[in-house]
Image (cartoon, rainbow, N blue to C red; front, top):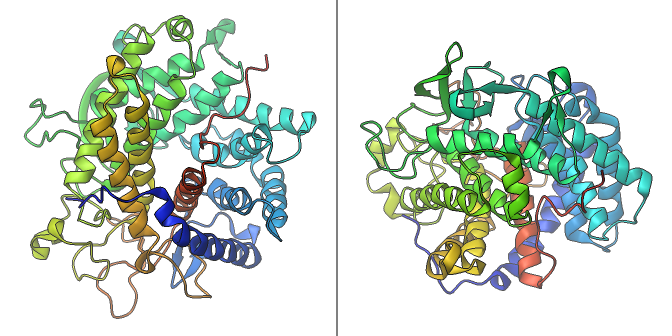
Length: 478
């Protein structure tokens, strides 16, 4: 269980954040110089050098998003402009295919990280206002949101989900973070147009997918099966597409359907709190107009999303080692050889199972957002200052570990930022260095990106800057 430091404040991380941004800028520039676009998309490192791995093209937005966030962090510092120009140029030159990609569930990763972050910077006044540039980013986000909403499997009783690259039968827990693109499309006044000019609400699809995920991908300790622990999450859910009936849990990247792949858990932990923040910007009439009868009011959405977020946050805290870094799966068989591994800091160099620092970078932001949300919400609507403090301090505790020497890539020629991440343990894709028995010492694009995003979030908290959200892009434009 995480040993939560209740005295830790964001400002105490300032020195670590300064060191981090100095290093992350060097790494972002190193990858820009070393990576040839003809090689495709960088995915993870082998012996410190980024390489590609064909599965789906879901990481390119993180590569360029890192540069945009580096500009966000550096502000007016000498040389910061080069990161902005790199992010802009690469977004225009490389990201259009991701906007129109009909074969993946990853639009919220690729396009919010690039077009979305650039539009946010303009709306925050961090880059000059330019109406044509703004319209370009807005159009990309609108189309991306509609393309993502079209990748839809309808279920009985008005439920449904954005299906994965495995096909219409497959719901991934990761996709909770894809919902950001539907939220942005909705915020910009867009709708998905279907057959016979049917106007499909992007907000309704967001709520439908979130409810389906909450119902089938997350456990609440109610006896659903023999492994029903409150807050446990399953990577994949399988449905019979002939009649929409739920069939079974599954996994692509976890150890088993009845254990918890911790990065999947972290996607849920990050996804619901940021959607709670977004929902607070909507009116009661907007939620009602979406017409989703399972969540007909803003209060109903808030209560459901909080139920999910608090369950997975509690599970993360309880089933993660004391320093806040989880092993890659809570049921990984080698953990049995590690003894009381939950009662001491994680060991990335052990002989049996790898840790996954990318899970920690994603999960820490979820803990922080959930903590802030509960601490500021009216108790009559579900606010809970005591629980909010617990989640906030847990998030800060995880972040402090990630900003330490063990997890940051300080070796000059290593192209990654965050060390000790794992991509696909069952398939054996991750590099095992000479002299080691499990993957360690390597980086991945989603781990690097979410670590940079976490650091920007913390920097703003520490300095009292504008609160970082994905949806601070201006108002409706249609």
